[in-house]
Length: 363
Image (cartoon, rainbow, N blue to C red; front, side, top):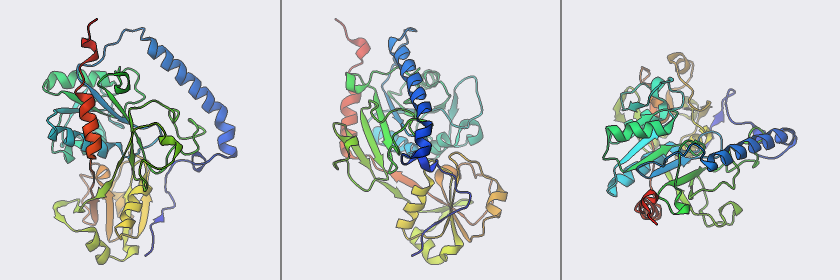
């Protein structure tokens, strides 16, 4: 079985981010300065000179310390759906990467324009069939206020990214509060372990967190990787679903049927996500071999882009599909991906969220 071939314009993180070498060592002084600035900002933030207030409901922050996507959005969807089944009423906030600048928070539904609110919030709305209120704005505290004003029944907020958003005051669970910080880690790990620009990290790997969520990992959290020593971690297994035709979502065919119907050189997979190779590898595990085109996260598409692809079948992710609503190309098939929240993670979340509000403690 042949494997996917990388396109000549495959866009990914610099290779020197993955292992230490001359280039990363030359850039290390800049990384040291970047870390020093961040530590200074964290210190100012900890002093809380502006006397900021915590939020009225608990917050679950799903983020990453590595630049680029690590699979946060499917986790946000899975968390919201699982919490709803557990009796909670989740709301979702997002920065809306690539969204048109707005002075005030914007509500999102499945009909929203990705160019105005970002592709990930629209994907969440479509996948959950507008079951949850979703608001977008760079300042997450403003999104929370707007969301709770519109939907006061919401009793837990899920933030798609936001670990580095200092204006969002938390009472982390590890300190006895109700808020939860989850760091998502994929098979790439922390690369060479350096901060930007010498490495891929926004923050040191030693960053405090309530738990690590591992995606795309072939091993369990019990292995001897020093990263996990003394840390709570959960492995989330993703699964590709049944592809559907972009121009006719009711028309579906299995991955095995696609593999049987087309020669490998007539199939092209396209992904503009944080880690395109993971999508290609998942397809290969399902017997789908062919060519691949990996683009930078959040890239946009045009009909001309797809017209230049010499293939009988083009496979794309759901995240990319929300930006292709106006495409009229019968060759494009959308491959959904879903995650299941382990029972152990759900039970742990329940135990944290049920804690009383720390602001209501009296001496």
